[in-house]
Image (cartoon, rainbow, N blue to C red):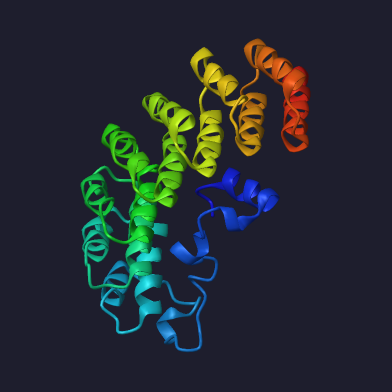
Length: 270
């Protein structure tokens, strides 16, 4: 999924069963615009669907057509689609995957008006809807989006949602996200969430961030230490170099040592 390339790559190395089932929660959009056997002529690649076509499709009896319409509104960046997508997202009797799609489309549009709606859906009973809502907030350039993720998202009772919130905090690239990532990195009980916090911190720089990642090189879980080393390699600088050299002297896990060596080489080259 485009929203979390670092997590996806890490999952391939450590076993995807340890990470949130992204395809199960959000479905796959790779074939969202391809006509299927039950599509009508307007769904063909040769016809450009209008905004009104997509709005009409939101009330279709076909779940597939509803989901495709929701996704198209996000892909086209239709700001005028925000109220319609919001209505789908908050419709509690709608299927969960369509509602999750609506949250993701609101994130793709990225308009500040969606923040209030995503705040409400971040408290939804469905884990999949909360997961998608957290990811969507990461693509909206608004202080309120960072605050929601920091105050609500990273404190969710389900670690999948905390994981998505940490991904989103990195996606914001806002310095205001760093304190929340620091809290997760030092306190969250799930190594997957701490690991992603270490990766998200690579989006930032400065002595404080390097210090946080240096501390994470002493985490009890080698996967977290691996990710902290990788992020330090991407940030670079003398402080990162010192932290990595120190960690190499004490690291005994082969997986983490490999990451530390690679990070050292990267820092030296740059």
